[in-house]
Length: 430
Image (cartoon, rainbow, N blue to C red; front, top):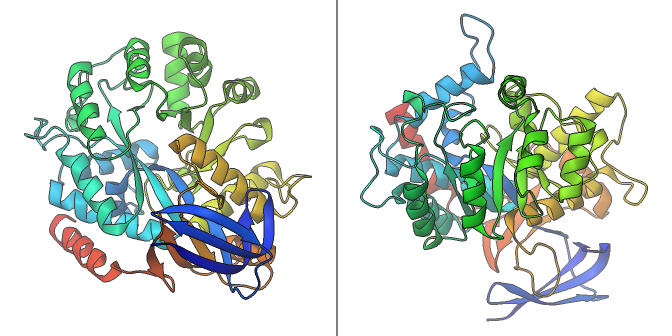
């Protein structure tokens, strides 16, 4: 069935337009018309979330307690491993359903799920090697979010092919078992490949994976922590991004997640390779990772919710801009001479980078998925600025994914059921 909605304002690929009618059918935009009066509200293309570990939503707010010594990413990781070892498939599905519900309410319409919790708690594979991935696909179907599965290859605990640690037993695959996992994931949803990091995959394994992947999305954690940078230098004599660019076929379908600790020359190398910088500003702040050096980087970037400590497009964009202001001691850092309103510049750049990283068509144009969100307001640039910088709660009012309305007046249509299932997991596990 064909539908048509008229908006007072909409953010089209060329910028803001007034009086825009969107026609869509079978989940796809069929026609965009301008100069059509009678509409209301402001429409934005739905934002892709280019990096999520949905199960970590169960940790949100539960790791904010100082330990006996200075806390860091590494002490947080120990707590995360404890959670990962405790969850069964039903738990993972319930947590993902809640996380995906919040993503939609927060303005994300697609998610790249960087999924490494593969096996049973003792490390043995399930009868269906993609049992856990199938639960993520079920959660995506239930909530309506568009899913890109990124099954993670994880084989080692450190540079040079060190044996995996005991706490990583649910993550581990050899290349042959991973190939079976990857093939099974392709039955469930659009699928890319994600070597966890240069710590967890050797260069030889990484290049084998790149060949298996073809031109699908290829994501990897890189240079998130200074300890990782130092270990890479000790192992190879080069920094992580420097080492990766020199030894792997990095190209436009690659997303280098975090890339927090990079030099100007590494930033230039990422740009030249056309790789996307996958930035997760809220998580990077929460874990004390550091600040991405945006002043050096002129390539594509997108945003992800990573550990899902707080899920909201506006808050991610706000944290990105404010972290740059703190680091550079300037204002309106992520705007430019060509797009002066900061919120609009942030949104358009993150949309384009997220679409590239996820292998999606995103935007309010014919042929793209009918995935869009609405916000309230009269003047679109100011309304988006309010959504990013001043809103006390997610500013999203309504959300359509592939022509299906899943959020109405700020609330997901199945929010109550998702929350009940999630709360049951918390009572049982935490």
